[in-house]
Amino acid sequence: MNKSIFLLIFLLIIPKFTYADISNISKNIGNKEPINAPIDGYDPNSNSYPDPYPNDPVLISIDQSNYLEYEEILLTPGQIEMFKMYPDTFKMDVYQSRRSCAVPKDVTNLTKNNSELTDDGDGIIGVIGSIPFPEPSHALHHVWNHILRYRGVDIFGSSPFYIIDPDGSITYGAGETIAKNYWNPFTTNDKGLQGMLMSKVTHPPRLADASVLVIESLNAKLTPRRSWVYNPGTRRVRRAPDIAYDYKPSASQGLTTADQVDGFNGAKDRYEWTYLGTQQRLMPYNAYKFHETPTEEILTPNHVNQNYLRYELVNVNVVEAKLKQDKRHIIPKRIMYFDKDSHNMLSEETYDSQNSLMAYREFPIINFYDQPMCLSIHAATYDFATRRYQLSSVRSIDIPKIQWRLKEAHDENKFTPEGLKRFAR
Image (tube, rainbow, N blue to C red):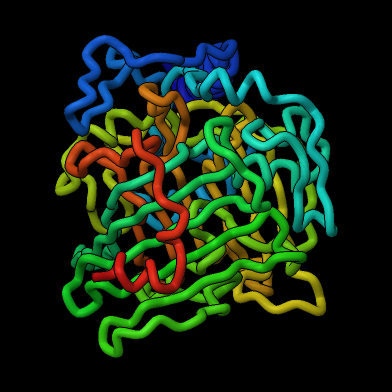
């Protein structure tokens, strides 16, 4: 056969395979199949969350050789930049979509379309413990759904963080947190609060017992965040009103801001918010394989070990946040991708004032089916300028499970400046 004819036939066939693969993925997005109870093999006394889908095959593996075929229809700008920056190692294994997320029935039973935004979106009123906006129609509805998604009640746990340099060297840190969440059906909320949290650094030793107390309201305009820090060197507690917006905690080494914890948190008044619509994009989802893998196998140079991440086609609500002209923030623009089913932020891209990508962030989720609830197992922030990345809020088989709903409720009197001093010690 003439070589030019063979090449022509080859080029004509390849797109058909590509579009067939894409069509196959789209069909497999399916209906919701929430996991509402622990699966067989789950042991509440271990740190493991066994994978409900261990036999699912990889439908498509996207890498440097083929990512351009999916660039416009399945990938986000941040993912495309990851392929460009790390062509030899970055890949995305795509699996069948399993819409596994669930919440306690009490949350569902309370949920009606009766919440309202107040004070230009910086406040919310409605039925406490519900999904605030089950039929969202405004950009900030999606943000509030994320912030107030079910995340337990009286919480205790610890999680490490890691910063990985391009040469593979690792900075390790760890902390311990107690929190009281008020937006849930299982506790009384008559204080107008989202919740209260105390956290302390337990590693490295030079920062041990450096601690913070944060009290977050349901209206940042009327009742701004209150925060205090305890310094082990002086053994004193002081107010810390700057722990908000683009304040950069020392532990993050400049990679993330205070309002990027848990995707996004805090006041919303520095941005103009725009809803960009619902899209189908490949997102890190049902990341059980990653959760069950020892951390030492996960932390590879440039990005986490992509062999253990699972991507699925997901319906995401896309929101843009652009800095107001009269406001200041070191992140001028953000694009956020919220899971339509669970309301979790699944990824985010940040842009500078020239509209160039600064960082790509991922929040792989699993269904903690003993609750049940869907939350991320870590926050990964990939900084394109320094080629470093940060892995924070890590939940893994290596780490004792976070207790999301203690049998004995936290004493609210703990969450005071004096209580912070006792907690730090």
